[in-house]
Length: 396
Ligand SMILES: *Cc1c(COP(=O)(O)O)cnc(C)c1O
Image (spheres, rainbow, N blue to C red):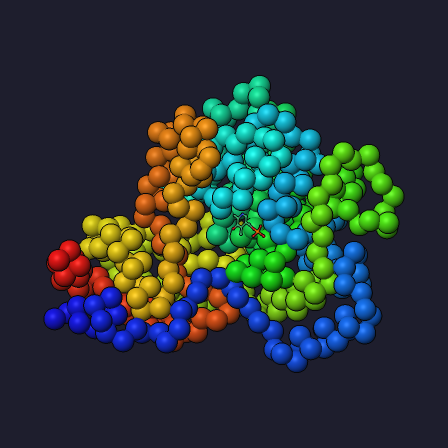
């Protein structure tokens, strides 16, 4: 029986413990100790401490951007930008993104306008944006997805010619470059996530980048540093500060970015070589960048070529302790509350719907080894070879 070797049917799992998706980078214990001893000696935890200041400066240098404003996570960052840019009414964004992209608009009192995506790059379909622009639209939120970019220059031209604002959710794109320019420099602002699963980790955190002094001042006063800055005339504040402990970890992670990027790229190449030989698993290349962080490893699964439906493959892998995932599922336009509140998008986004049904993410990051990739690809290959038997046995 070809199926006997699968954990789904009772065999021993290929991995002893779950192999998760995400960067999940842990510096050596000695480095934590040194960094946290400093915090202990200074007895200073938050509110623009020395590590926080050092992190903002180093991010500005690394990204070549005038202002890097650290925040407690990217979701707050996106909410703050929407507020600081004084957006009103509606904002266009791709439906194929992490829920926080649209949720940040709702929190800022704005209505999302969902745009479809390009079926090859999975980035926002630029040729469909114009048709969505009307008098109620005040801005575009580009999303630089999956270590790639959504052609920020072309979107900037489009926004400028329509007199609307532009910013980016760049949570997936830290360190990537477009024509030699680091992401972080496009639009009026860009927001990065330093969540533990992202390539730059503060365990939880993020940063807003802008080259606009006025916007930076507004953002700094929305993220208050009580007592330190002179109050600016901003109605709403949200405590979105990053602590010294988070900044300490982000500084170590920034120092190790080159090594982590190289490791991810090497794993990506391994996946690429091995997946090539498996029918139906089409690797998504980071699009629109000349340097990628390879933060995610994403495939589109062609069910007929591969022989098994995506969700069954995920079950097979999970039984082996490989935590493969659907991403952005089922698409923001199909999730609560948007499916009920904005039903007009339900039949408007065929490329998003088709990708949501076929997209699968595999582990990549600091905790994944070359051997792990080989083992994962061997499971995938065996699953393809045994697809008919798996089907038959699973349906019993
Ligand atoms: C991770 C992610 C976010 C959310 O980041 P947080 O720091 O967890 O708030 C937003 N958008 C995209 C595209 C992401 O991948």
